[in-house]
Length: 487
Ligand code: BG6
Image (cartoon, rainbow, N blue to C red; front, side, top):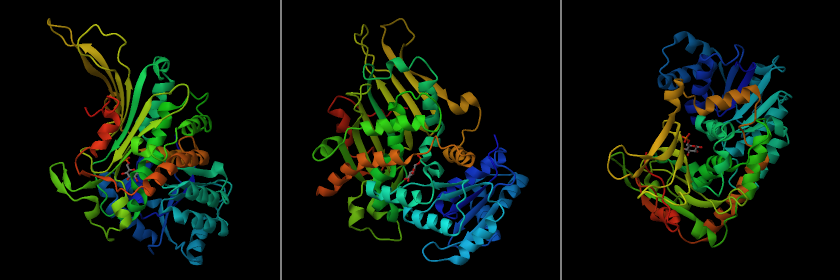
């Protein structure tokens, strides 16, 4: 379906996110006929570019990565692009006037302000929009993560933006919610009958949620020193995945029902504070090592335009946490979360491990697992026990029943941002985080950070190309469990 006509104003429009994710996603949506003909994309930055400069930049930097041989489609897409220079740091009247001029006469169409810029600019930008009289009732604002560094910071941002836009107009993006497998998790759980009876502590032993990356953080020190793996990945992406696994069946697929259920999960998370942080959390920082046969530097030696500081020594590039959802369905089922940079492979997945059969009549065997692979190659794999053909002893072996989205549906699997941008343009907030969700997530994260910061010890080192510090293994090992590492 084609979204409404809209003006999409991207603040930070020449930045990394815009060039790597937003513009390619918009191009694909345009090519698939999902952008209304009159829809425009207005990039804002301090860059001092003209429309022609900006189009040239997109042609040079974005097009080669899209391998678009479709000249006509590409020309149409470029024609939608505009650029306005603005400096929100000061009273830049010329910049706001230029934007006002560009938007004039289009007050009655949807207007989306996408803030792909650091969070300290969210408040000033929204105030600029309001002072220029550009916040119409049909406006929406999209906030990129990170939404603050802690609960207090998140509340401040939410208050600042909330002073200008109503909650229904605020779309807080978590791109993991746009991934196909994540959407499919909802369909798998709530459009199939066979899972629900076993989706609880009677049948499930534990859940693992992993987002492993082989990349490091070159050039990102300024951001990453202040964030670390817990704020960068767990507070948002991993907790959102946990919510979708753990939530109760919502009564409707509408804008509030799913978010209401996710909120209840976040509110049921058992707080980890004080000495418990030592038992239930692991922090690591990569040192030099080898990834894909290539020697790579440690976090502190990553090339960057700033030198490492005290914060660089203390920041975690890996974390593993044993979480618990304290409610009837999940009592006693650990949810292990794990994410890190410079791990051996890039792999994001949710592993639901079932309990073993109560009484086995065969030698060997093992638990059933449901593996939801978010990437690479998105798909769902249900590992069942099967008999290997042959006349010898009957020994059960785990065999995956596999569903690869790409092979089964023979359609291009869209990038998360495509889906989410189309939802923003058509005004559907279901896959976006509500204020109370974000704040509940921070309420769980804050005490962990407080304990980490008050302790004297730095994160444990792990060699790049290894699956994190040894303590991550022990986090499961001490209860006889192990991270699932096979394909
Ligand atoms: C971003 C984080 O939100 O997600 C990055 O800031 C991380 O550090 C990225 O690399 C991972 O996303 P994906 O879709 O590549 O798994």
